[in-house]
Every structure is written in structure tokens, then in C-alpha cells.
Image (spheres, rainbow, N blue to C red):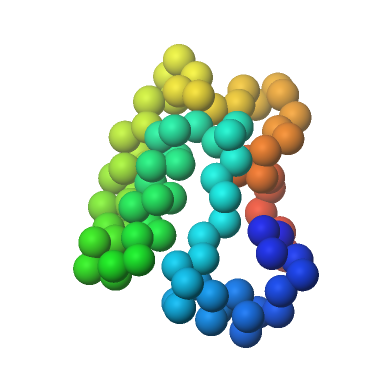
Length: 86
């Protein structure tokens, strides 16, 4: 969680009123970081549509690593943590 000391209401308010965004970890590949920044644009009209996000993600070249963590290594970056939930 990027803001463990804030309530959901406080985070929601800060995102809207103060353009609060989590810091992108240095370990996050630039290809993913760029997509995240586009999705977080303060101007909703500048944010990509979901089909564009899918295309951007699919375009990331992982054939030679692409800055991604190999499957046999344990990720330490939250960009690569397994999803939570059932």
C-alpha cells in the first residue's frame, strides 16, 4: 500500500484535489512507468483508453528481458508482486 497511514477517503480526496500519485519505484521498468504516468494524468481527457493501455502493454518487448524480472527470480519491487485476493 503506498499510503498506509491515510484513510481511503483521504487518499481519494488527495488524488482529486492535489494530484496525489504514488512514487514509481526505481526498479519498475521504464516501459511500465511510462504507461502508469499516462494513466495517472491529472487531465482525464489525456488518459489513454483501456484498449490503448492493452496495446501499450502488449507492445512491451519482453523477448530479451525488456527490463522485466525473470520468472526464476523473486521480485522485490511492488510492480511485480502477485495479485492479492481470492
